[in-house]
Length: 562
Image 1 (cartoon, rainbow, N blue to C red):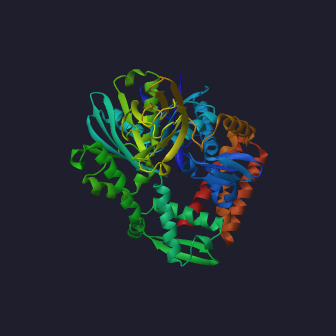
Image 2 (image 1 turned 135 degrees about the vertical axis):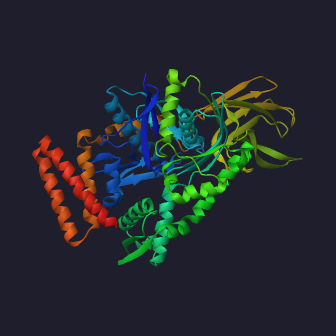
Image 3 (image 1 turned 90 degrees about the horizontal axis):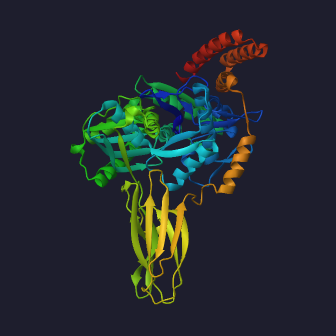
């Protein structure tokens, strides 16, 4: 039995398996270990996923979409090439691509998966992720929190005991987890985070700062110009520790140029670095642990490669953080460990995992006296309770002759139910009686996958009600799921063997559109030459031309960013 571990990221995704006592990272059809979480549709109506789609973000922005993980658990729709998709469907296309890569690599079908999710994902987002895996043809046996997965990778790697803080800053989310290793047990004490803080926000801050210096704003740029500037800033961010970079861009009909260096970058992203502090403080307070009790701080997530982030975390904890595992692969490695545990791998028998519920779960209730009641949120399972967990709380009728109690389930921390995340509701019939004479016991049972089982018992009659919270108002119903599956199965996917060529051509088209004069003419000639080789359909010639074409594009790509 092979269980695939999937790190479904905001910016990039990856997959791995556990084999022979170690995690094996699976390359995609281009030989890369990271697949951009980007989906597009080309002129032929064929679906593009990964690098080929990412290259078209500039040239075909209306036919390409990225960063849709932030839409998980919402009802938001995205239009690509006049076709409408939701975040679940888009994510399923990325997962489907990873599944096909794994099957090609392993030479056998893959039917089961462990998928990582941000620890601060609420139930709606978790169920949306699970549905995405199912749409891709996988049975998702387990959702694992990303920082917990990273900690498993480090715990297995380092083989030491102590109290750790995992700071996971990816492309779109921040998670902070406090955990402890002892006697082969990994116990999570607390998690906190920010679902809208990640590497993409650092790039957006750079874009806004550049536009401000140029005296214009986003509305003054066309979609293509904005995408061009975004990619230039993304590249500048990766090179920010080096020499100053001159960035040129067009907007509002004019050409602009700004100088970007590490000092400028730190000034621009300081508000984001400050935002790191609150989740870290919340996690430590919930765990009841002071910074001095922390044995090690672990950094994971691609955005932690930024020196400014590492420096900010070091200052908060007054120690250098650990990053001995590549931050891009720590989560998927931990997911592979979890997959190995599920397959009873002998090398993992001594590792026991506990996790926590990241948000408080409760219901709406009325608080007050003599008929003057206010609707309030009544917690049943407090945040950071160790899971699996089951808790019960009793509630009473508030009016004479009341025959029904409507129980609405929420997730969050606000006293007003409406400001929390609504998960579902139940109508409970109770005997006709005086106020406070009838009561119900509401039991919440929450498991490792974030599935909430609600049991309600009418105390006087013993009548029982049950509801498993699987579908949030924004997620797919079974009927919608079947419709999505049917629609996705009708989509056309281009052959795997042509992926490398499609990605290179898309890159060439991007460089052609971004260039002018002689450079544009030369790039056009290079593209035409490569297309001519492809048309001859000679595999030996194509393989040679691929290398030459990629080298020439690399030269022009470097010139463009310098």
